Image 1 (cartoon, rainbow, N blue to C red):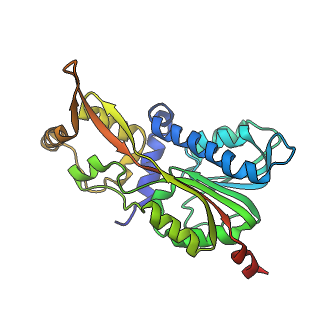
Image 2 (cartoon, rainbow, N blue to C red):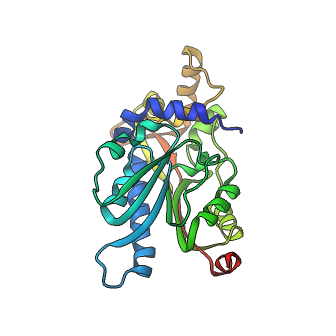
Amino acid sequence: MRIDKAQVAQRFARAHQSYKTHAVVQQQICQQLMAKMQQYIVQQKLSDQSQLRFENVLEIGCGSGNLTDLLLREFQIQHLTLNDLYAEVLQAYLHNPQSTSTQIHGLIGDIEQLDFPQSLDLICSSSALQWVEDFGALLRKANQALKPQGYLCFSTFGPQNLNEIKQLTGQGLHYLSMDALQQQLKQQGFEVLHCSEQLESLSFEHPKQILQHLKATGVTGTAQGQRWNKTTLTEFYRGYEQFSQQHSSQQKSYTLTYHPIYCLAQIGRASCRERV
């Protein structure tokens, strides 16, 4: 499916104010990603330092800043470049930076069409790379932009993500599996340090709340041909009954599945030798 990046930007811009409140799973994913970065990277690089230092960092798809806040809190970063599709996401950091020791720069636009900053120590991203159409090309650019032994750390979503919506509407992204992600990382000269996946479910009292949740988090950017009216909504609510659960209190709940995948990789030695 061809992704309309302008429509995606528009949907996420509309959801900017509501995203932090409703994107509960995405916030948890950021925390999980940071915990894994601390586990696998900090242990490699830390000696007697109390905080890991990076000179140049790029965050792809910074969104509402959930991962950005963690990066600024947990790491010492000299230059941080924040990328997203629309400029509003950068205002809090460009005009009121949380860390006076970090120089923050904006890189607005579709990351697939932009030149990466060079000599990067770390490229990171959370819940954004599923929107990338040519993942291999993005990895090649990342490889060339990173310093030898530089890190690429990201979370994305797997094939079971929002599976209920895709079954009922036929709308949804094409998600790469964890195995496919690892294969592409290795093909592009990365050494995979860690890769894992989970299934997370949210529960709602009515399918209408699920649609409201998706709209509030901007995820409806994939619904290019979906038009909601009384008939289609009734069909959607009726169809969602197959994903309901009856509890002992007789109160029904309706599930929505998220499928986060975490990947931590480093420029491999062979790739470093090719640059020399």
